[in-house]
Length: 193
Image (tube, rainbow, N blue to C red; front, side):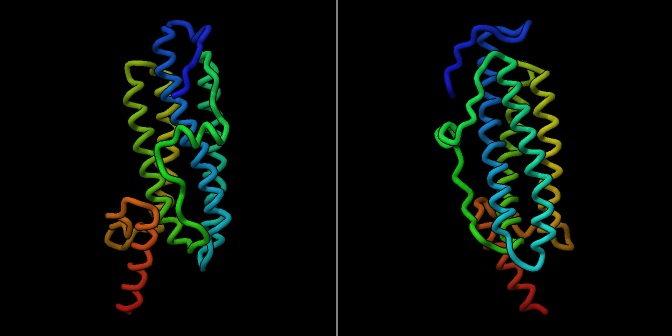
C-alpha cells in the first residue's frame, strides 16, 4: 500500500491504527473504482433479447458503487490520509485481472458479473472482519457497502438461477468460464426442448 505520512488522525485512534485502516480503505477504493468502470463497460457492451432490462439495471449499480468509492475516499481523508484515486494507482495496486468479457450477450455478462461480485463481496467481508477491533465506525461503513453489494449480486444472480435454485455459474471461478457455462446451459436447454 501507499505509505501515508500522517500529520493527524481522528481523535481516539493512534497513527499506526489509522494507517492500517487507510490501507484497508484504499484497497476498497481501488476495488470500487474498478467495479464502477466494469459495470459501465457491461452497460455499453451488453447485447441480446434482454438488453434493455440489463442495460437499465446496471446504471443504479454504477451510481451506488460510485457513492461507495466517494465515501471510502472521504473516510481516508478523515483519517488524515490521501486517497489514491488515479487510474495508474488503481492498476498498480490491484490484485485481480481486468474484466475479460467484451461485447457479449446479457447472460454472458451477468455470468461474468457473478464472478466479479463474488470477489468484491468476499474482499469487503474480509475487510469488515479486519476492522472489528481496529475501527468499528469504518467497519459500519463497509457493512453498509456489503449490504448494497450483496443486493446487487442477488439482482445479477436472479438472471442466472434455474428453477431448482441452482446457479448456472456455480462451478465457475473466472469470468470467461462463467460466460461459457451460461452458453452451455442454453445449448442444453435448446437441445432438450
